[in-house]
Image 1: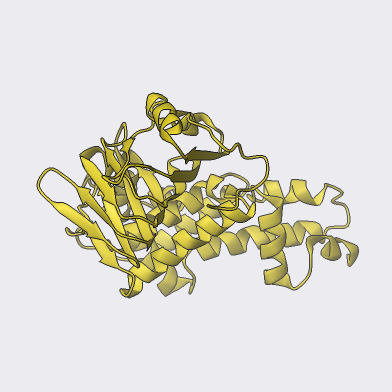
Image 2: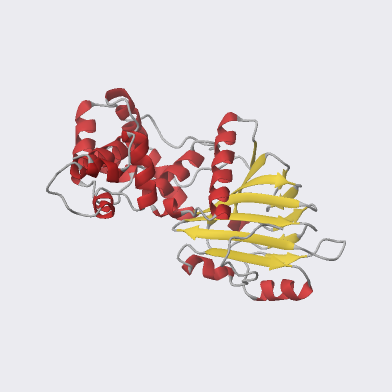
Length: 333
């Protein structure tokens, strides 16, 4: 079984509480029939049952951040499950050992080691796994995914794109997402935490990475033409809102264009992606304020007022950008 970070309970059947957990880690274990009965009675979104052989062992870790939930699930015995999640959500699951078969209304989807399965949870009717099964993944609320799909397009309501049900990690784009899922899991398990996903910008980036991988249908019509006025409007918005949390989607709306067109325009006119530009501007503002002799605010306050939600993230990025810590910059003024 997994090495669980300290302070996490060994059994917590209240999976529904994940949505109100404020980002805390939820741990579920099933080792016998009594645990299984408690879990199913507590409202776990899929009804678990043992495989034909009889006994069942099952363990799951999950943490929710806004519209995203990161999870790791494994079973030594294998298991069967029926029923989909309440509400509309999409599961992106990297199979790390064993195999599984997901059954939908008109098809079965088979997964093996090194594949990523993409499922609309409300359409899942049954899940069968082999012994020694393990999967790591992310659950994204359907409304949030659909909104990002629209923003990546020309602004019209295209809804949520249809995805290929399984992709292989040998695919270059899929390998990128697989590594992202592994990194999220590593942060969850090592205690580094997933506070970075509190940032709407990071939520948006992860979602957009997924949207670029497997759409069956085009997400948008022709991109709007890039122009210098569009970039100027975007830069003006960024400059005026650096102290506030905002996303690339917000910038695109302010500039009167789509996210995709904005990304192309920034790379062509600025030489950076919008995300890199926003980060650079926040770091430059913090650097300038730390160098001001008259500014006696704590470093943490300066970081927060420059748009950084977490001090550890700010300190790491600052050192990468300027080659010294924020405190060292202050000492040198």
